Amino acid sequence: MSKVQENPSDRLLSLDFYRGLTMFLLIAEFSHLFTFFVLPRFEGTIVYTIGSQFHHVDWEGLHFWDLIQPFFMFIVGVAMPLSFSKRMAKGDSYKDLTIHAIKRAFLMLLLGWGLYCIDPGVIVFRFQNVLAQLGVAYILAFLVIRKSVVVQIGFSVLLLIITEGLYRFFPVEGFTNAFVDGENFPTWFNMLVSGEQQGAGWAMFNAIPTAAHTIWGVLAGQLLIGNYSAKKKLQFLCIAGVIGLVIGYGLSPITPIIKKIATSTFVVASGGWSLIALALCYWLIDIKKYQKGVLYFAVVGMNPLFIYLFAHVGGADLIKKIVLPFSNALFGWTGELSAQIILSCIVLFLLWYICYWMYKKKIFIRI
Image (tube, rainbow, N blue to C red):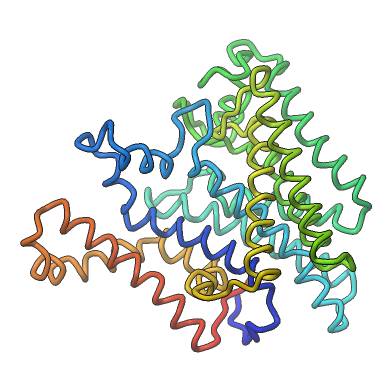
């Protein structure tokens, strides 16, 4: 992990905004802000309806919150050709890029695994979080980054076909109900690696099918740095996104959309939304130049690894403990619920401010 100096003006601002908004929402979860919107007192109201979109679906279906991890894995893919082209312009060889990719994938896998060992204080073998998943997806995407568009798409589809086949035809007794919680291949795989036996858990095997998100991100990144006009790039992104939505939702009666085990329809549908989101950001920020206020999120997108690790290892809870007595003293009169919401907003603001401070100091954490 290293601290580097970087000129933000050289960056694709829409990508930083997209990544920053995604990370901002992730750290908002650590502030516990979204938990208040689904309290029983709000059931049947617009607050509860909107708030439920910021929580995962229990099993089958798709909420907005189920798109956050696909967004991030897709964004990493978009950044890969941009980053590698800059490295090659500075004189790095393909061998240098390969070594860098392997090291980065290993460190992401290691950091993702390490986060699971912190809370229990013992060594456990779990790899479900976004960092661990990215460690696998990153290297798979790198393997085909220099291949043709057809090969990259074909490889991503092959990963989904392998997943579909294992889910439907895995030949171990007791694990043959492909889309029934606790009775499928992902559950068996979790048990094999870590001994986990509970149902409704996140599947470690998700790293294989969701690598398609990163590969599709690579294709989008290659498009954005290509010689096409901005209008043509936008058209390609929109068309690809719509195709993903049509296929993903269209096949959902056959293969249900389930995020927790990353079914093929989930991957394709969420990939479609990822492409549409990038197209929207690219159109608004890089084409229409609506850039007022974009920096608010972009600063988070410039240090995604740092803020994810900081919030995950207890940084948000530490800030909350420090702020709590002062927040209660100032806002306790508003009522218990209002004071808790205000406290969460303060914690979220301070997490953002750390990113802003690092941006102003030109500190960007990389691996």
